[in-house]
Amino acid sequence: MIALKFGVADLAKTRFVISPLDHLMAGSARQGVHQGSGSRSERWWRDIRRHVPDRARRFLEVVNASPIGVPDFMVADLDAVRRQLDDELDALLAVPQQVVEEGVAPFGSGTGLPTALARLRDDGTRGLREVSDGAWALFRSCLAPDWPEIRRALEADIAVRSRTAARSGIGAMLDSLHPNAVWRDEGVLECTLGELEGSFELGGRGLELRPNYFVQQSIGLLAGPDRQSLLLHPLGAPAAEPPARPSTADGLAAVLGPARARVLRAIAGSGCSTTELAQRLGVTPPSASAHAAALRAAGLIGTSRQGKQVRHTLTDVGHDLLLDNPRPPATA
Image (cartoon, rainbow, N blue to C red; front, side, top):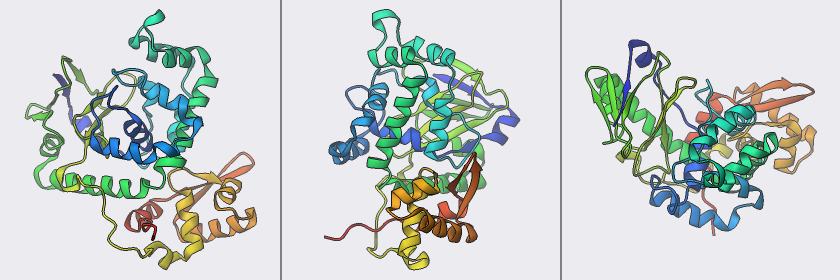
């Protein structure tokens, strides 16, 4: 049992975070290697397996290199609560070589180190780039179509737990996360993680609570002195089933029009430049720029300049609009 010790500042800074990269790794974790996911990830993998691009191979090899899990640096450590995949992958690309070497060391040495992790250690920046490119290719081909519905289920779970915190206190909410996470009144969250034993003071940084659609059977914990501590947990019973699609009507297209609905969905999950947006939509850059300007004027996207390019990302309003209006199922 690992005892997480909370101070007043830790309780004040504990928050929920939704991570696309976490979901890519949990959905791609195979049962023969990892034991924490469950039937939902297995069903998803069966459905998308034939669509997995070759570029994703390096990422999948790292995710499934060891039953211990993945190196800590694969789990994004960012300040933003509303995270997009490109933000998390940028953080991965910025990991120093020394941190990579230290991150793979617990998985073995010499011939005992899994091949995928040894290659990642030895390839330096190029290895991180290949893993990052593979993650993005897998997301775009396999997870992006389901991501708005998955995110909607995650937001619903967070809303339920937030109401618990508002009515009964943060301790009661933490106690409700999973049977393997038990809150004690002395300010300790006891996490049962196999045979691991010890205690850890959060040190005023708080705890990130990361609900995961694909994790069903256990919790995961990452705690360290040099990064934000986090707890990966399943969705609660009220949101345990896959999100339903009650209507074939596209509410987003009804509000924005079909063209701008496509633009907003193209930006979701990972921000993009105007040129990249045009490529995703199959239109000219001036047309993509005009649509982006209209969405920006409505407060649905934000645009920032990066060098000679601009980058479009969803605002909170844009996120919420997508959550409330998932893509309708294809008709036969």
